[in-house]
Length: 388
Image 1 (spheres, rainbow, N blue to C red):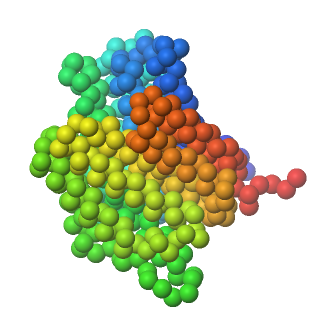
Image 2 (cartoon, one colour; image 1 turned 180 degrees about the vertical axis):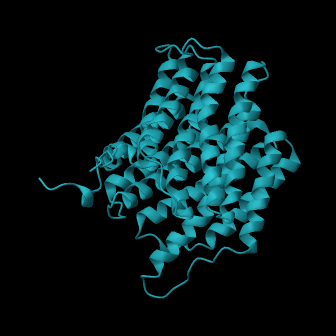
Image 3 (cartoon, rainbow, N blue to C red; image 1 turned 45 degrees about the vertical axis):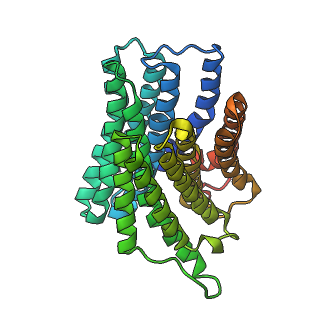
């Protein structure tokens, strides 16, 4: 008889395992490293100035890993295809790690080669996602490929702007915009669905409004406002468009009955993270009328909206897909709360105090996240473990 196929290590048995683990570990290390760089305690020898490295790695290092973990888990559920596992995941994880090392320390490569190496991961991710969506004929998911492809373009633009001496601002804004659009799109799909499923088990009461024309219109408005902001970050037109988009998204969120989810912390986290993203859109809209709130908008979007939502999604997916109860006590609520507190500290306090406190809160949040969720990611599912 032929030998049975070798079962991969648990961490390489599913995309969410390896990439959620990589993303959270990287988030816990990258911010302290950034603070050490600011104190001249660590030298970066890659192609970017220190500030640009920090921005790039939070967007395209951390963000791309979370995106990979989500897509490699969600798309097989949507299409009925087999999830990626084993050697393909090892190769993709190695490619992602090589990008982080090259961007930080160059690896002896010229900037154009570093760009190619770093962008290869997102190119592979976009290509594989497109192949599976089209092969599965799940046409409703094709629209997700637009912001995913836009995120790849943003990374290319970031590198190209640096190589040509034109700065990284457009690539940065496009990266923020594409991640925000993905959260508005995916969050608008999972938050009301998860909320409805849970509320259906409770005594009768208001339920989330199903996706309708209002939701579709609100997504188009937000995407349009964000694209306008990428090309024209300042001015009354952009500011007004972003403020209107934020207001419409706030109405959208209110229709999902988040006020009824207080007893389910995993659900409440999703609603609060979506609210943080809306606040980021609002602050970015105000910043378009004057420069004072530029950093506020970026950090509310990045730390509160993107950071909060990715932590909430990684937490829920990791528990659910490893056979653990979808419950978040204090040990799992604390990491999310610390991330939101980091966003508040970074935007509400002055100067260096804000920077250091936000860095400490962010790092502590991800260390706690790893301590609780990490074992679920690198160990086998409880039901699949062999008896002692």
